[in-house]
Length: 265
Image (cartoon, rainbow, N blue to C red; front, side, top):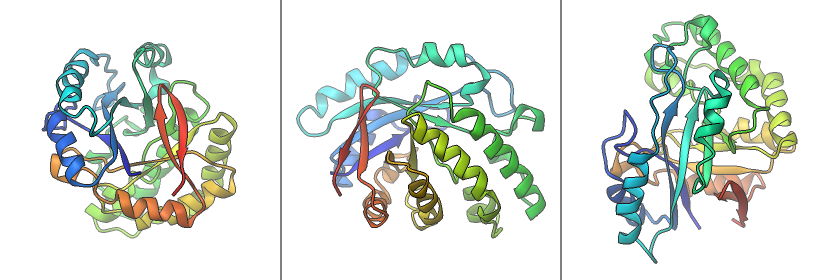
């Protein structure tokens, strides 16, 4: 059973397709279910507090799409919640929605003390800059890990897509193994998981080191997501990522009403 649990629709600032289009694309890609996880970032791209998120547009998209795909494609309701620690009370209110199935807790920005900028806008012109960003990134993730209003940490290797894939560096996470171990042990102790994010099919093999560390720290919960922002990217890399999970001894986790269930791969 292949499930893409990280999708963005036109309800995200960087999304462009209605949910119905994403769902149709998921069927074409061989997905058995999807979860829509539009952005809710508590800091904007410049690092300023942002409390503008509203559920109503997402509810409207679900109300339009679900009847079209009834009996063919379950569509679960999720959210990608960024920078939770910036306003935990607000994060708890957002995630108290009674129909919510799944919450990805993500780090998209530098820490406030480092300027708060979205990682996308950083110029990774040298390895020194890359490692400064990674120190900030994993520091924020350590702050996130013990909090109670998310289910999995999103795209743990996230900055590498900009540092290496986009800007041509060759940075590894070798220097951050101890920090990742602390994060993963905290997640395991709180029954939280991680997401293998395929970045539209571009980064599946890049997850080997992270999955190995997570497994050795007692981690059990792993979800899969393409991070698609356009319909043509839905499901990309999901089958390959499922095979990778099986290789490392994981079952696939899928959430309903904030509770995980496991699919044998």
